[in-house]
Length: 363
Ligand SMILES: Cc1ncc(COP(=O)(O)O)c(C=O)c1O
Image 1 (cartoon, rainbow, N blue to C red):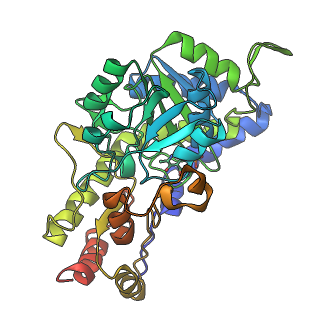
Image 2 (image 1 turned 180 degrees about the horizontal axis):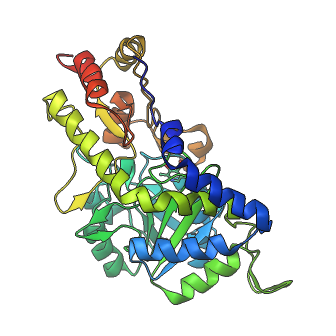
Image 3 (image 1 turned 90 degrees about the horizontal axis):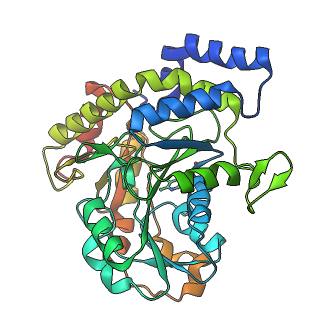
């Protein structure tokens, strides 16, 4: 048996007719930049998330940049975030010459530990950026309360969590601004790069729409410093074909997660979803000792695994200038040694789950 980690090929075959037709329609119209499909997709994303504004953009990294640019995050400002995430989260803060300030994570959810945020706030803090890691929202209510108390903004990096919910609302609806990524392997992926920014704030939405086209408010008139940050029409066409199936795919991922949890027969190994929220299971990530050995064992049986993420951000070479030290974020450092993601997509079979579990039980 050879298990496919994300199984994008199977998904394409399932929706091929609609995807091909949508791409062909763009080719026929040659409306490659900001074509009708982009506008229609944005409307559909608003319907799906409940957010007042959904603004598509070039990728999940630019979505974070656009969010912070709309908030006017300036050089020297501080943005509090987690050290246990993909580099883009903190990289974009640093790219704007603001300072990423890390706060350790919780063991159960892998997300930022809200109880440790307040001590990290200084006079320079402007925003808190929780990440909905592996598809599960962080403690948004607690974080929003802290933000209110100190007059800070909340940006949710929802690159991995499109469609997840917190007390019945999608995490695209929450925060001052929320973002996502449509990178192919993300729960809702396009066939190249793509992303979106969500907000209920009209002023931010107006700015972001201008900033993704070089700050332009009228052709060749530039109100803001912006970027070339549009979503390609072809990618919008792919997403439009996939979106109608997405709610069912989320359910499929949740069922696969339940199968893993049952098969692993151990709450120690299985990741926890906190009360009042749902995960879209971008990754099904467990903790193991001797990770290299376990990965090799699974590989031999045809089960691919991945490590998200082997090194916390405060230990990355590019962030040496922040002068963090080993031991500053012990939970993130420990989990970086132990985490391992199992094959996860809506099409993982019972048989595949069993095969993986057999290798893991009794470790
Ligand atoms: C947590 C997180 N933030 C941001 C990004 C950036 O998204 P993209 O790859 O679309 O630029 C990713 C994607 O890998 C991510 O996982």
